[in-house]
Image (tube, rainbow, N blue to C red; front, side):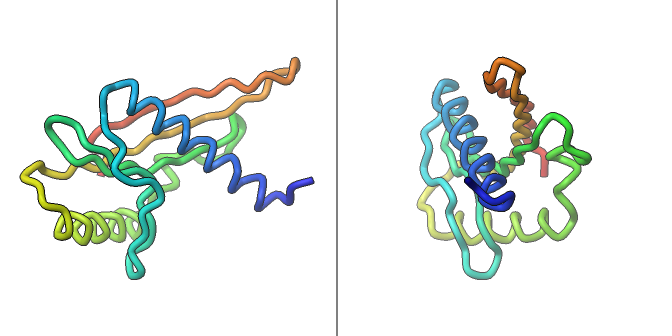
Length: 126
């Protein structure tokens, strides 16, 4: 049986996979998942569209969570994310501008054991 920390980590990974699937269906190319910069932390998904390099912060929550995914992103997280984006963009040879999005994934388990995933995708959120 998973501990609550392990269960939360699995829920987060599952949410990231759902968002990556959503982006692929939209025609985006996934460049990286869980990209890490030692100073500024992790970016959940980096994707490319015709117009942008997209950096996605994924926040997965259960239906009864006290705080929404977007509300969980504070000024410190925004600053760290923007700095990580700048580091990644310096390494990438592209003329496409960056865009930072937030994906809120809400999970509900039904009485019949089925999992329902809902996605609120917010473009240019940061």
